[in-house]
Length: 160
Length: 108
Image 1: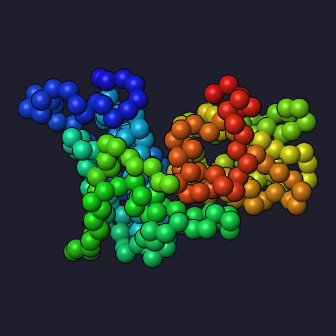
Image 2: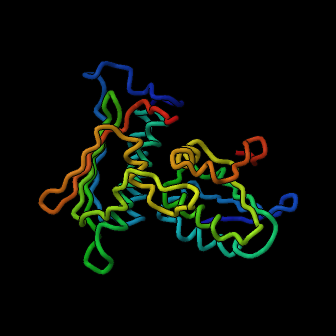
Image 3: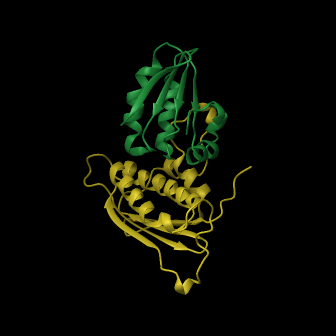
């Protein structure tokens, strides 16, 4: 376990000697299972990556998974979407892939633009945060499933 | 969910004592606190020093409370931890909230 802040934890022993850090989980997406899954993820991965990278990853996944939980299936139209997620620690960051069998997300969930702060918007930030905090973001839909994959990089360039 | 209200030098301090202000709790947080901010009364301070994780639903709840204030009543934020600060900064909501510097905040 490497304590402290900063993205140093992925250095260290050569790749061959380093244990592979992987977290996978499948669950029906609700606000509560999203929270549980994120807690399990941080429990598993926290000791192997920097605290800042862990926090950014947790935020991105929270936004993505809560979109699925809240908008992936119309209310009363059957079981909540079934999510499968997989997170792998790589030298350049945490590589994440998430798929779900929910519907197409509404456009507002996928807007990469942040709402205007002066209007005191109560939502619409999710995909903006995802887009901002990730690299190599891909989204596609195949066989009635949504697939999203991205890397949360070790080093985050701050805006401005 | 634990939220406390205290009087501090004539201001009402609303202290969120949970580590996570996320989608799972945002609605309950908003419904619990809103009656205390929506009526007329002294200015408020929302103390988030205990909160280690905030997502956009949690942010939306804080914004909803800000919007529930009657004319002339103000609500400042304090005790923002680094992860909470990041969400406010990236969404630029730090530009429209009064955020008290750490020196004025409670023990974080």
